[in-house]
Image (cartoon, rainbow, N blue to C red; front, side, top):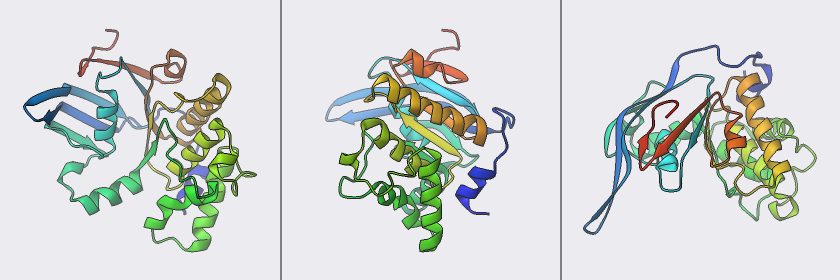
Length: 244
């Protein structure tokens, strides 16, 4: 069964499988610049179960995006252990890491990160160019992903021909086109008006509830955080206790 077909055929329901997708133990990240050190994360431990929708909140500089980037294998911890999908991804070399990320993680950015000279279809197709799918299979996956986010009639438009909300939906389609287990969203509604933001959050909710995608989202917005099952707060690089 193809990747996006699995998305289409998934059953309904929210958190059912309690397998742990993300397991962090004592994770710290220190950035060194000349003689200065900045602690972005300080001894963070967190478990995220399969099918959970988790929101990470906190002031700017609290370490939210740093933690997100480590879960997505974009950055590495200075110390501690981080297992994602039961794998210590930091034992992989660069090529293996890129392949692992492309197969298992869909990343949604605040600023969309679309290629301006490519159509919506071509932007969504980019992750599939690293796979062994045929051109027809890629076309089927991209078409399904764009229809899933309500843009089946905009696939040949350039980003400048789309609204901000539509651009973010293209970015979501790009993130899910490989059928990843884990969806990472860094302030996905930060640059959107309230109507477009709600549309994006409803799509994330649908991916989580209908297709059992694990979602980890950084946000400053309490309304966006209300879509999550679990809200965790970071402050000065430390993860506060639940309810703290």
